Image (cartoon, rainbow, N blue to C red; front, side, top):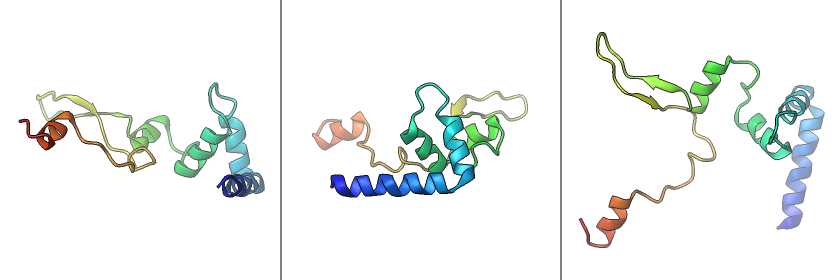
Length: 107
């Protein structure tokens, strides 16, 4: 398993270094505090629009932009919503506490 992971890391490294645009993005991203090669490469793979779109469009694309629910004079709640599916959104959810209680016969 370690050999396979090492081979994948080598392939990713080769691809990043062979593409000038990706290499430049990785270099810029890793100058930010707490951003290492792994996070930079994840962002390059999952968010190729980074560096092209405005900050407001990127936040909406990622799903961390506040969305207003206003209509006319009505001022609704603001919520963070939307975004493209990514690694965190594709993991199965455990359900909320009500689901767990229902499974144990509690309501």
